[in-house]
Length: 492
Image 1: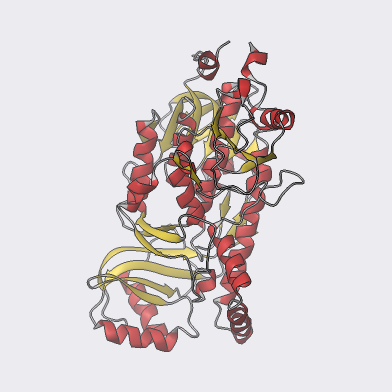
Image 2: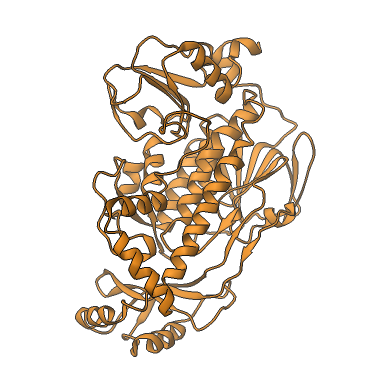
């Protein structure tokens, strides 16, 4: 069997699709695109008939920017975004960016969420994914071969796998019966964008007066008379019910003594500090990703990024399973790698939330941490945690680089990430002695003695994490088998 035949097996018409994804937010759209890189037949179901109309600004952190660069999407996103320094994220403690962050993209990219979703959805469609709007999952049953879905309109579909990317109130997770333990919301915060009716200097003066003790309150200029407004809510409400402009005016007066003449809102929403993590990310042929698997307060701006990184971790593994070359336990590593990362994010958002409290004890801890962050090592550790460039998966004993992502280093052909657009593995070989052999249908090979590496060779997974370090062909072959299955010659 040659490599072209192996990478394009015949379609099985017993299934309508290989994978059906519930939810076409950033996670669902990105996962669909990742699967299409491997010719997996994908359908994305989105219950909303139209994309969201309000223009909420979201932030892409360093690791997500790196992943976008790996797929050739970053330049397109930057055209629609605004860059800001990668500092001041942890509990909104204002500290400068640590020197020499290990990334070619040491900044935050603020981008309107509808623009991000639109770009990712179009990327997935361009690669061949199908997207159906106004379609909701009403039920499903799974067996040893696949999943049978029933849609809200009565239509029945059959797929090999189902992935729930349908948000914190995930229908897929609930139907699957997966527990979602954690803490309910204790506090709520109102967030929106609106015009103000007072001079900027008056707002700046009031902000300077209040920010020492009210860390869940701010007005930030968005352009012209439009401001981003965040203010504590009076209590905990049904998040499905959006707040009104009068709610904002009332809470602004309660906190600041003035409502700043707010008017003409672009959008209004509320968020709570509920913190929950799914007990399992996979049950048989049904998986969870993004907010369907984890929710937490938005402090630090990690939620959307966490979901995108779930998609990059899962996509190539699920594709390998469908294509028939996945090692036996590869798909299980999705949970073993991503569940601990989410647990760590939940913990750091819990800590940050406590540091936002106006209570004297919390403020004392905040002052102490503010002092500690003057040490570069502390500041750097927290920034790497928030931006996910510090994530290290447990691949066993080895150098510190093993299990970490590799930054976008210079190589003979330009930049490393430019070689990862197809979502394949990559052997970066400074010795010029190694080979990927019969794994060439899944793994590319770059022999480059000039590559800016401190080690002889690295094997990169499609998500950019270092799966092997060394210079021995036999050892390399063992790790190619571990991550990319049997060579195609053995499967003929």
